Amino acid sequence: MSTDSELLKLGPDELTQEVSRFLEKLLSQAGLDLTFHCAAQENTINIQIDGEDVGLVLSKNARALYAINHLLNQAFYRRSSDGRAFVVDCREYRKGRELELELIAQKAAESVKQSGKPFSLQPLPASERRVIHLALAEEPSIRTESEGTGLHRRVVILPAE
Image (tube, rainbow, N blue to C red; front, side, top):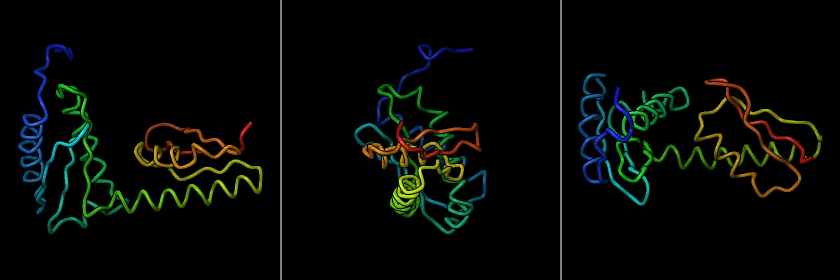
């Protein structure tokens, strides 16, 4: 078994090429009519997906979108020479979802402030839990925690102690 130090580290351009080849095979083997564009930015490789089958990618709360993102991070993060993460998006789903999550976070925080009782959100992927935590980080009268494991991990909003 190879260790991280034995893996060939790739710069942003080579990494983007490897990811592109990987995605071409993945989407082809899955029989999905999708196109994508990869671009290296500051500390990420951004991948935009589009095409006839975007409905499948975005269905069930974008489960396939997050699965592709997770797969790329697992397969390529350690290959990056500078620790780049991968962000996969489709028709700006993430931007809209982030705004939705921030609104949910604010409404839940107001409920906690008024009632003094904890409020548990539905289970969310790690990237969405992070949005909730960051949205409420500056609220002095509440705090957030993640609880649960795997697909059942959720954010709980609590009164500050």
